[in-house]
Length: 138
Image: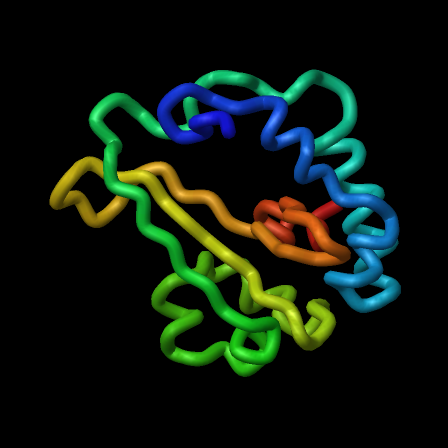
């Protein structure tokens, strides 16, 4: 398996490209259509995904958080503390029964580092929907 944080990993990231069925499984119908169009043109389409490292030198600590779509929709204190605030704008667009993951790479002892979000296991595989609130801005 590729080491995404330290060495990059374009092939691994490409393997998480959602299918049309994945968009429909994660998001409510109207938002799924908008999300697929947005991610196809702004994230997955066009230029290749960079294979550069996701973590900066010295960022050797990986921290992860998860929340169910029900917790996100309720905007619980744990979600508020560990997910980007943009999720509150799209919290009602998620279908129930899923778990969304966020993570970051930090230097030891640091509170902040390189942050990522939108990892979902759906339809038997991992998919990536980073910063879903950007869909609203298209």
